[in-house]
Length: 183
Image 1 (tube, rainbow, N blue to C red):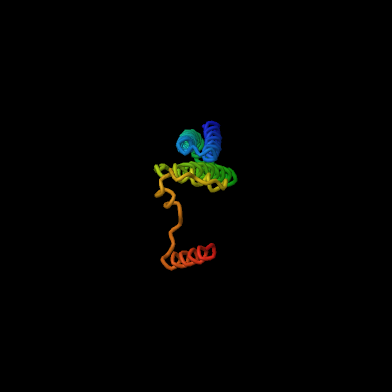
Image 2: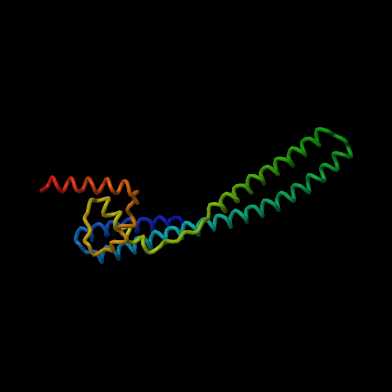
């Protein structure tokens, strides 16, 4: 599963390179298609990672069950040994058996913590439609490319940070000054 995830991530990078090439050629429809493919590959990689995580969790559960079975057998043996040691009142045997018993419980705790942490790492992720436009803008910005005006202006605007009215006023004032300098 991890290999398939890596393969999907490589395909995602290839699609992003195709976005750049399409933007350079002025082919916005092609860029949109490649962006959709890139997002699809990204989701595919995430799904492979999610499935690998689930398989690891199942594996840990099976391992825990096997360990519990083994620990139960060991505890049974330890209880029998404790009974025999108590009958003979050999303190060294009692101490050795109790130490073994405690170490088995510690091992079981560690395995349970590992399983819990792997289960906590799983999460769901969904991708909204506006990611296509944002990805196209990102690729264009990274490579210093200009987009044609065919893209949805609202998607471009949504990627911009919002400014306060005071900052907006200052920027408008600077723009007016720059225009006056050009004239």
